[in-house]
Length: 571
Image 1 (cartoon, rainbow, N blue to C red):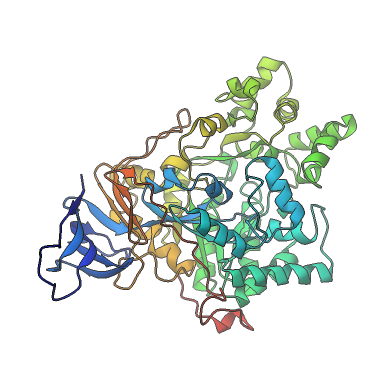
Image 2: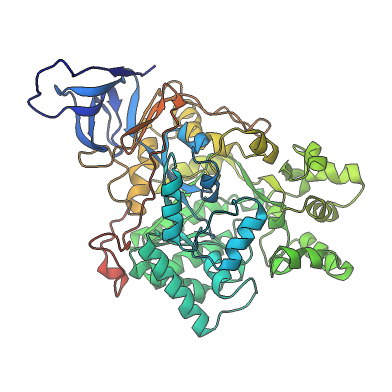
């Protein structure tokens, strides 16, 4: 096991040159480029990498013995649900223990910009302490800094957040004035440091946005050096049409595109994946900058509300609950849930029906005994139809109820992993194991996404080489998201570094027992600070809010007149 070796310099003569703060010595270096590794040393000073080479003669205040271990840039979680949870769980332990040093957050919703009413709703939900106040993304970044976080955080500005801020929760097209206000909020968030605009187009209110609205927001993002990222409108029956919309938005707006958690659900739709990958490749060859991320599991995780028509959810939770209690509306909702060809994304259909939906977490103690059962099993126990059972459970729990949807093909996962533009994201919050979290439930991807790539797809199945797996978690997302001096082991870059055992790194979390930390990661440095030592978190809160290119705190920050005014390398 790699360990820190401390040396005293008190009695030594003045050094001819400044010593390293930390020297990672004798490891097999995977520098993030995807090139063959080599054995060598990494020297760190003042939070930055100052030496990467086969050997160094320099002295160090601390030395990490990495012989027999892999040394890589800290991993980047390209699609994380960790944002507000960092306010109460700053250690981000399930990610940190896998070597993740930077999380990218904000799928459709973001921590800013908020109206006062939106902030008050976060307080009422119980997830955010009432004494924490902020409204803008910049204020949220400063709040995280004041409280301390263990990992670095970068954020999108959420399309649903923009919509709720200006239009509310109504299903309608924004007026010209409202769209102008939304664009102004994009610019404000980008100059606060957002990476771009993100959308979640199967969930209300994001589902209400039409293509022209999304193009307008993406144009503003592109003028600010940012991207357009999306949970596309369908990952099932209309997967290809939804992908075409994403490509068209990128082409029309000039914004590079990021496809969130690429997947297609339902056996009948699985053959669409090779077609989709061909379309993405053709778009890339035509000059459209599009990449994707994925997690390493065949089951997705989301709420039961993803199996209910979006129109029912218009106006927020209270309006939704009032509608489903109306017998006439409830009958219509159930009929639409049973429709074999709905004009909305029914995730339960993608799972093959209620047998493919496993309930994972509940808010109320009385229902927790049902966790781990399929919706079909619960319906049989209750003597009610699956659709009626689903609505009853939501009413009784007073929440959207999290579930696993077994929708995907392992063959498609392997095929996706082989695409050189696909990075890795957990689509989950980074968690510590606490009694409250255990009650809340979790998808195993929160604890194992990154380690599972190495254990299953590198060591066991050899879908990726070790150096390519490292590239997918480091330099690829860093380049596409324009994260500057992160994602590589290079002199001058920020010292986010992970030391892991390539023979031992593995996931331990399962659907039945998700609360198991991965193993095999031995040392993690975040901004040059030891954050995991000997496989255990140190408690150091060395993370930072990582700002996008338009942040006005940079000397070259601020938005531009056009997307072409920014340099855009193809990742």
